[in-house]
Image (cartoon, one colour):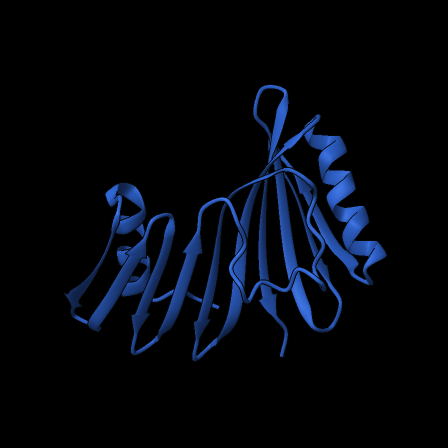
Length: 157
């Protein structure tokens, strides 16, 4: 799944600076993009699809019952629903060393029926897991006593 440039640009601009609430329409060469912000929640709609972003919590559509996450503080999470498919991203700050937290994240997914398809470790440890319904890439990086864990999840066809 690929996030269209218009949606990505609007998401970055909104997340980078806007506080408060409001709606704005951003004209782009790919059509108009409607951006709506309510506190820490962001919604972006265009002809290509929709993006919902949350700070501190998961989007309502997040498959939390099917894709278990490590415990920790949810820094940000995004849901993308577009013609090419549906996907989510979640960033979590967890206590512990990166290798231990990563092993826990992979273990939770395996217990939920996922199988690991690959591992890469080069400063950031990353694993790809699938279960027939979802493909998950989980990456973990040490952040001085805590671990930053990034999940990228997409529905499989």
